[in-house]
Length: 394
Image (cartoon, rainbow, N blue to C red; front, side):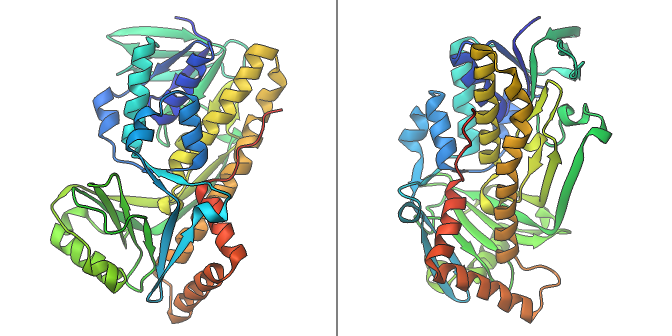
């Protein structure tokens, strides 16, 4: 087999890159080790930055998102017994975010790829990149009991934190930056009306809480829990009772509870690998970086990586600008580190750390009070939340 761009991973970043390349006439093949049902069963993020929304529209996969997604032009910060609304639209010149689940984004991209007749090889075993530092990289994998070789010009590693792409790069060629947080998020999905029309991020002495949603009838709520906690120890009733304790009283009073349809605990970490490329292998999304979910940046950072690589490859194939290939990692990392900083800041300001004493709690409250009390502070939060602009590829 032969293609121009081999993409490892059929999650949203791999599918979005494939869709954009296909529409530009650049041949690509996606190789994925799981089956489609497994990919669609993963519950992930649901807040899309303005740049991600615009990129999905550019890829012509936005019809259902535009029809069913919820446009939010603000969110609330609850702390010290009060609630403060951050008016995203007013503070950023009209930019907003879109609440539309990652699962739905993935479903839309899968359907578009199938309709286009572009090739995705699912249930591929032993996927391995080769000769990334040469002019003739290729993939090998097992499919239906046969060994397949896929020759290509470039390889896009979109296969997540545990995927083979980053592992194929010699360890001595990479620098790893990582922080593991001493808590996790216990998340619950329920078919109940949202407690608020916008997201609520709550700092409380008992720990962080987040009120989010997937639609006007499906909610996603989170509680900060200890790293040692087990999901089996949290009944629905215990979850709802604890959530009410951490929310402002007027919000807790109008909370509608119900049986969970999914419940899980996600650990929190910050992770960046540098550089994000090795020869003709490019890392995108979770293969290169992880952010704690507090800033709603995970899927959005993957989308910005996709945009950068796509626009570079456009110029490579249309204008012969191979000089741009070596700029991929530098361009991506500038935005990655700014998103890491915002996610770290949101996490630090809103969570209760094991060593947080009364002084530390006051510092959190004062920091939040300063930012929401300052027009410049509110604008800083807002412009980061809606997403920093993508760099032009020149």
